[in-house]
Length: 111
Image 1 (cartoon, rainbow, N blue to C red):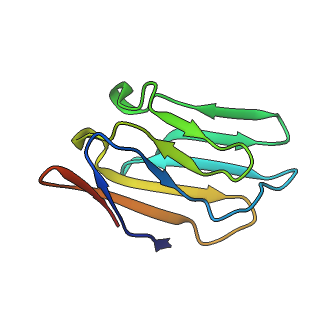
Image 2: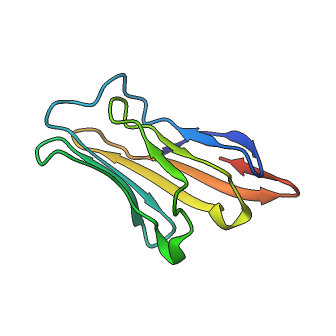
C-alpha cells in the first residue's frame, strides 16, 4: 500500500490520481472510502460501467467526478465529513493506493 500527501482547503476540490494515463480496455478501477471500504466510484470497461456512488450517509452526493480515461476521482466542496481513508484498487496492479484525509483547522490534509 502506498499513499500520497496533499493539502486541501475546506470548500475546495481535490483530485485523487489513480496514476494511469489511460484505463486499460478491460481494466477495472474501484474507489472506496472508510475503514469498511464503501464503494464510492467504479470503472468496469467490460460491462461499460462508469459510476459514482453517494457513499455512507450520502456524504458524497453530487460531489464526485470520475475521469473515465485516467480513473482519477475529484471530490468537490470538501468538508470535515470527507475526512477518512480513501483507496483505489486497479485490476492487474498491486499494491493499491491509499489517501487519508484529516481535518486540520479550516483545511483538510490528504496523506
